[in-house]
View 1 (cartoon, rainbow, N blue to C red):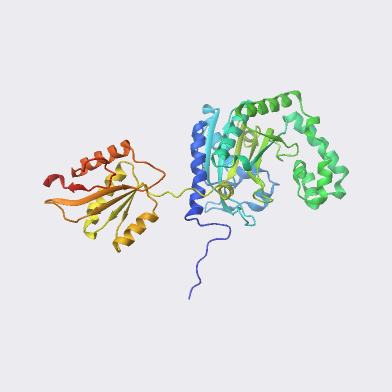
View 2 (cartoon, rainbow, N blue to C red):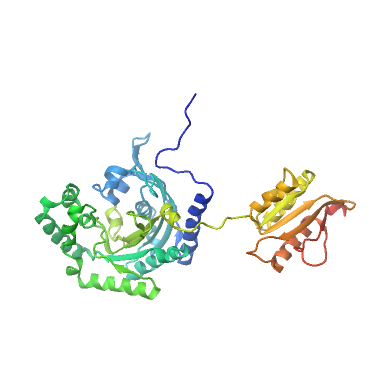
Length: 442
């Protein structure tokens, strides 16, 4: 007997509350990106391997250990995207989107990294992504961060995250600071961890965020970037923080927050929480003015951020169940086709409806109650008049919603368009019988 087929390690299946949490995050993202004027952008799920190798750096763990790369039937090396920014930058170059700059775009979808699965971290995971491409002004950084802050607030996380902010300076600042860091770490090479000694030769800024205990005293004593900031870089950072203050976004300075690759400039930021253990970053980004040029395009300023959907979904409150507006209970199986007719008419006027039939009358009403609708429509065929096809009763159920004239008028118009109707006195939602007749026979 064959063994039970299993999901691939590091992937996930979602249903019910877990899926509701996921899509609550996506819905909030889509809502807020519209408020900020970010267009939806779609890019391929796989790219030539060099797109990610050039953007992420050949020596990074993502490129050297974690990418899902393969050779296709034509002999080309392709890679499933480990993040969005590189693909969007490639699209900007290959499609000539410079004509649209400054370009504000947002995307979400699956990404792939071969890493050890753990809570909130998968090999196929999902990201939100937002980018402003072609804007060199610090106002773009402030707007992008404000977008992130509002998203987190709408998800109910404003009091559970902290915005950490730093500047990486301009090219001259970064070069001077990098030189000072290399000199400092070289003087302590023998005391560094093996990983940090390797980083010293390839990516020395990353030693600053090392988690190894033996590295921390050396990293904490390293030269600070503020001692090397040019006047222009200092003014840029001041303008970003002033923009955040004006937008009402609280922030704290973290002078040890870095990005290791040389194309990063100026702003670096992370929203962090204490509620996810050691993996506390829920959203991170920064300015990457050198990336598009590094990938073969024209020199183009840009700033962006990304956030893991699964990690945000773990933090938010359980979304309210999405019950239908109407549960239509058919008390007789003879009414199935009339029920389909009425349900279809409701859906055409954008009123969600679930038809309940089968089983005893009690079970039907119990099932309708579990759907948590706003209204229950009951259809029966008791004591029908000549040519009458059904009796209908409408009852308001939800304590969260009150009957409205707008709802009544929509239902009246829908019924008149689809049936001949004998109405009761008073509101349609009073629970009185409404007679339904075929138009041609009444």
